[in-house]
Image 1: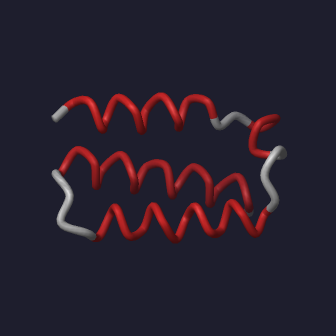
Image 2: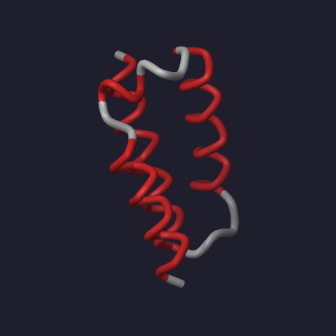
Length: 63
């Protein structure tokens, strides 16, 4: 069960300011929507929590 959380943590750690610029703002918004589906779906709690954290971080960098 920690494997999906570890994967999301790795992806989230890799999304730094310079790397965020490699994707367009439209692509970042699409990722936020997809992460929202993970967060609200019938996923384990740790996956939902990690998806929510990643959505928040991406959203704050877009603002």
